[in-house]
Image (cartoon, rainbow, N blue to C red; front, side, top):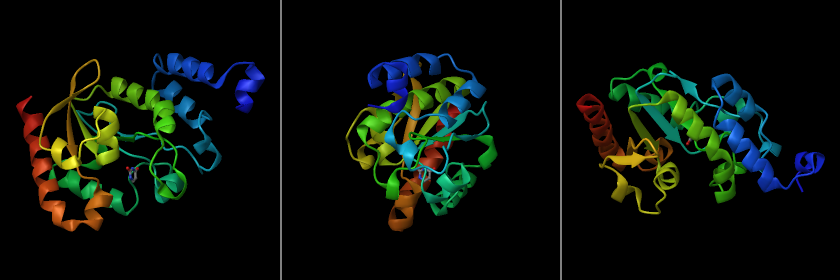
Length: 209
Ligand code: URA
């Protein structure tokens, strides 16, 4: 059993419930601290540090990636590696500076060797992201890549079939658009054209609303 649960004399699922209840009423500072101190899944054992999120807390556009990679884990900031540089360029193509938008990930800790997040890790970590979305309250969410799209839309459909549409996310029905992950685009540059169309679609959708 988790050492913290043992100390409290409660089951791990009870700890998760407690954490979720606390997170749901957190302001930015409380949330940042809760993330920094989180030991709710095993990823805390291998992280250098947590990667909270970065940018404008009043942004109209919020981007959601998958999980920190090597450089993010080292620097404590999302999307700062090679994929991050491409993401920053993609934002520029949309007419946004990086600091104008808010950027976060589904997971706040790096999975070892950048493996895919496990369902239990996502389930444990998403209350943090949900609260970040609530606090930013963006006009539009962009799910960056297949993993983020799958979890946010609760679907297993291919990325191709969910892009170029406006979906709705959460209780507030926040509009959500899906696009390719920059790490995928680095491996598959032929899809950069479609990603560029997605970004124009994001821009038009923001302007329309
Ligand atoms: N990939 C992601 O999905 N997020 C990051 O922060 C870095 C790479």
